[in-house]
Image (cartoon, rainbow, N blue to C red):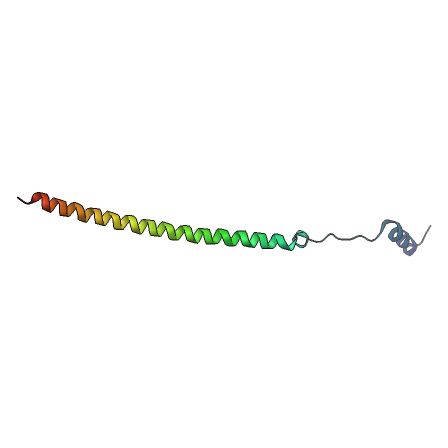
Length: 82
């Protein structure tokens, strides 16, 4: 029988040291982080722009409705004159 130290030395010599693989986030290349960050920034800017456009469209539709109401009132006044 071989002593434990000698068995360990033989195992280390023939099998090699056990290496722990790095975590997934360390295996991702740095350019992938920049790509994801750029995509997220693009999505954020798009969402902000979309909300501002919706607000502007709503304001313009309200203004158009007020102008149409005013025009209809003036037409009613003019049509009611003898």
